[in-house]
Image (cartoon, rainbow, N blue to C red; front, side):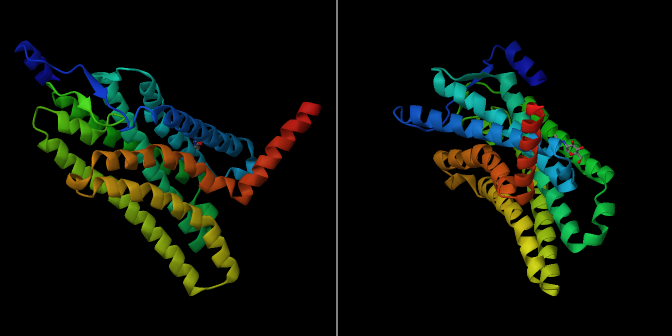
Length: 320
Ligand SMILES: *[C@@H]1O[C@H](CO)[C@@H](O)[C@H](O)[C@H]1NC(C)=O
């Protein structure tokens, strides 16, 4: 911040807003894409709200797995709300500017909910690991207190991480180039525009990115490896069916989320064209949050049962 003041004192130009170029679309594709994104965003919001509501209303779903799922839905909902409304708004207006402070705020919440999702996926993998490998101790290990601490820990870690990157970003100054070739204030796109030295930022991104992406990913892999090995040791048709039905959908989400993130951040960016980067970003900001509720729950028997119960109860109370 002081650097920025110094620079203004010396009468240099300081960027006070950025131009979000948005998606690389032809003008005639624009209306169709607008409708498509709007539909996807609405599906995300409604799908996730439905899940949160169902889990809240149905006492059968007051178990650790569904509590984590409800938290995941909440974080999906917020994650796509950080970028999508702005994208939709920008597709409508001629000069899609975003003020400096808004840009940093968007970056903060993007990191916050992105990491939160990552930590919640770990908690869910651990939950499945305990459920399948220690079924008799499940209720004692996954006590409500322990689950709450896992959720609180996720919030604390993700606050720290997002704050660290945002504060480091606020130290940089931006002088002339303010065009972001992206549809949101992406950290790496912002770093490319900075006029001051970004070495520290890049180092922190590398270290923290490694910790925040790779450690959760390894923990999840470890949980599933344990699950698979425990099933192989005592093979039974029922056990295999149970494991596949609960873990198959988790693995889908995990590979979707980490596949795109790791592809984006850990592959050398020199051969990543801007279009490829944007498409990948679309994948995890829009597609993953939209698909999560459907993958996790709507093909799940408990959730379908809950849907039936909640609606029947409401209809009958309506008649009374
Ligand atoms: C998140 O999980 C905690 C602990 O299991 C639970 O108490 C809380 O209600 C959940 N939050 C949401 C939004 O579902």
